[in-house]
Image (cartoon, rainbow, N blue to C red; front, side, top):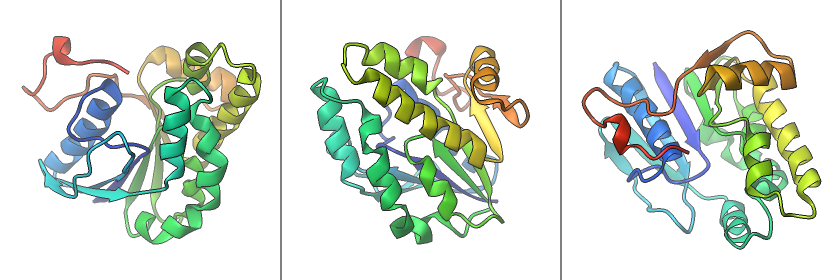
Amino acid sequence: MKILSVSPYPVYPMDFGGQIKIFNIARGLAAAGNEVTLAYNFTNWGKKIDGVVDGVNLRSFKTYFQDIGAWLQQRNIAPLIITEPFNSAIGPNFRSMLNGYDAVIFEQPFLSSWMRQINRSSVIIYSSHNIETDFEELYNQKHLLDKTYTRMLSRCEKRAIDLSDVVLTVTEEDKAKMGNLYGRREGIYVIPNGFTMPGEYSKSDLRYS
């Protein structure tokens, strides 16, 4: 199979839990005999690496809005979801990058509007790292506009779930809560944080997201 994984941030070298999960799933799929491309949004805090690493074809793209969002979040001004409407507007510019694959995996919901740019012959997979509304509420709870941001994130997360053929969560608890919040019960599978290639990392080596 030809598989595309889409990440909203750089994934290699791996430093934190989200990167470890994204890259190791891609690497595992490649090791199973699939042709895997991992397209990542090259931001101002990551490293730009284009080429094949451990069987995974790394391909960078840039939206620029994600850089702005990262800058705002680092200064506790606004969470990353503030970039979502802008990323949604430029989604058609990336249609050619997204098509030509048997399956497309979207990591996290921030680029979920791009799912609409994919031919329906492809299987669309949403890979959830958290119940994002829980995570962002805890992270940004001091913001006066937190309720607005949470509503935006909830809409974004729901869209990712509704438009995908398959949903991945990291825990059974997240799977159950996703069903309660968004009404989806079928086609949801659990891949725990800490997924690795055999022998690569021990559990104590991982920093979870």
